[in-house]
Length: 81
Image 1 (cartoon, rainbow, N blue to C red):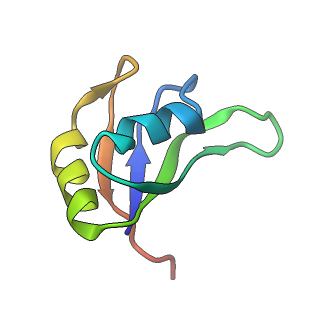
Image 2: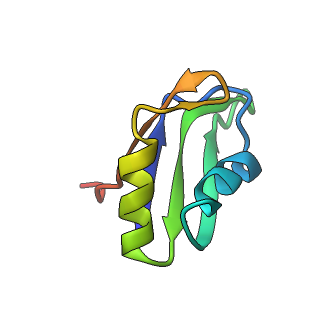
């Protein structure tokens, strides 16, 4: 299951994002999206988890929680149109 994570601290990297979600289950990938021109974080990212139950628990517990000094938004990723 793919999860969207927003309002990340601009210093958050993909490794720290992965470690956060590993507390809830197996993470297959975690990526903070970077601006191509500046190389700086855009403040959001995506996490993919193997098991849907683990992903749903992570969403429920991490949404509106504090991570690295910011209150993050965590929700199921919706496909782009």
